[in-house]
Image 1 (cartoon, helix red, strand yellow):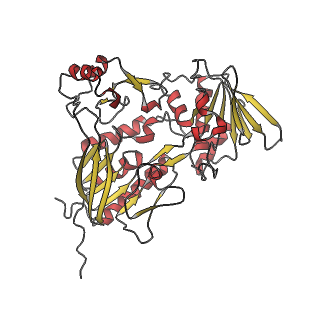
Image 2 (spheres, rainbow, N blue to C red):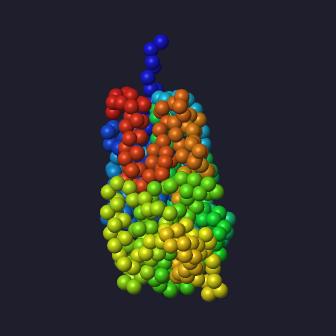
Length: 429
């Protein structure tokens, strides 16, 4: 019997981070109908939270804005935020996908004027800044948010503050009655680009993350260094606002450790080198210690490592610290043994930055559909005899930096195009 061919040439992309956005625009710009789903209120993913890229220390906002413009101008690409996949049925060329949407309590009438935020005094932890600061209960997720639409925090619903927020909107954009909904869509191929979350440092008991505000993660450091972050770009001690001029950067915090993440996340060493550069740029007298097992700067990024290593105020200590002790004065002290000298150290710092690894969202609360499997680490791989119409991309498939994620997403877009017939517009409605 002859192959009936794909019943749908629509490509569904799940996840609106850099990989999902890349796959979506690449497929749409060659003529395919694309649906992009993002479970958060805006797209951009972890890249939007970064202060700068390595090795050139350029800002990610410009590249993201270019992609947002590509999405805005392409009529073949439809974006749903606050949306996640809860079911997939069918086969390559003919999938039925069930999508759940959660309320943002603000509809498409929003002009991002900010009147709703001005009307309320209620504040909630800011998720974009990892809770390091607070934001009004009606808020724009961040300054470059796409779509430019406010969100009403669920904590406000049912309170008098919610009514103030609604009354302040002259465009009828605030919908306090919005409910969770589900709908179905059809697709010929699915790109699974659900990204990653930072490993929870609270699980590393010996590092005392939960007992000191001056112990932060690498992603929290990105927000501290950003002009739109909780400190206006000043790298300070969160505990008291004093300048952080003596800083420890601890590599493999929970990574390459069978009690936590057994694998290397590829980006952590280079991220810490970048953080050393942030500190030296901001404070002429800053002293930075990098504790490492070994430095992994792949390919041409070796030059970036050499540049940072040449700085006499950046010291590399070959050691995986055994513990971090919080003193009576609140200063964290890093304790362990120097692998090279065999000396036992107890070094106090203004700030300690834990280079925690990348944990795939597919290993947690964003499980892949039927014909995809997860490896021993939780990264998504196609089943050996699975349906090649569902393609993992970016960090959903393995630990990658931004440039490699973009390459992975472009390859996934091509595979999705091949899965739905390979000729743009050949049978699209």
